Length: 123
Image 1 (cartoon, rainbow, N blue to C red):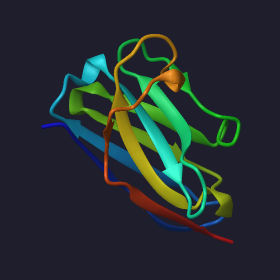
Image 2 (image 1 turned 90 degrees about the vertical axis):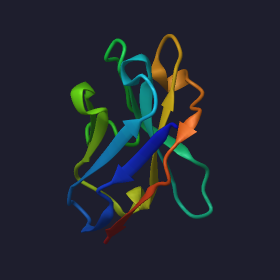
Image 3 (image 1 turned 90 degrees about the horizontal axis):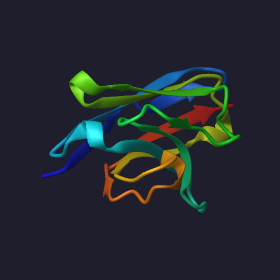
């Protein structure tokens, strides 16, 4: 059974940092890309980063470039999202997801999803 479990969310002041973790099981971790997504109330889901465990390629949209860093510990089947300089507009439920594909992971269709972790940034 495929499982993705996020942790590390919470309440932080603007300018602060959080590190999210995504622990994966039930599939061959090295063959998949892991993506982080977020969804705020009333807004569409947004991809905030991804990493391909096959070739290490990364993706960040402009909204988080330079503030968020994704990394993977393949030995522990865990992907991290380090979020620095957080802004109130980063407030959302953050999800990790897994996908297989070729090319940049930003274009993958993600099949497996975690339950999400709430991140709230106060002003």
